[in-house]
Image (cartoon, rainbow, N blue to C red; front, side, top):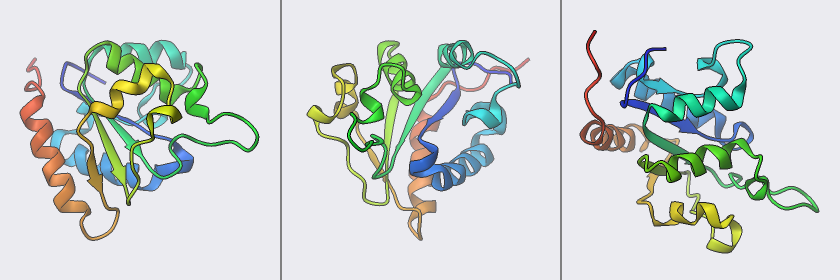
Length: 162
């Protein structure tokens, strides 16, 4: 994938929001092109070190979209939520983007809300200060994604021409 500072990355949990994230990916790919949108394993070359590849992709990221459904923290019975684990990939994605000053946009799916401060590690507290957008997977999906697209188009640099 040829990337530049215009890459849009979708950060999500499969068990929480895979279906709607796929729809968001498809919509953004139509608008920005598949080479500008990254959604995980489907965009990752086989056999690469996931952590190294993730760091490389985030180095060229223009915006990180954090797809937050009602189970995003990934609560586990009798254990802390996965988001509290320093090795949790979703946590690493969001922490890295926040640390690097990459624009981070929380997408709240189907009535989900941002977690409370005490439900997140301190490193993710800046996420709570980001302007979140609601995304309804039903009939309001397309107008909401059009709004997201307009915001991204204004915030991202134009793709580099070869």
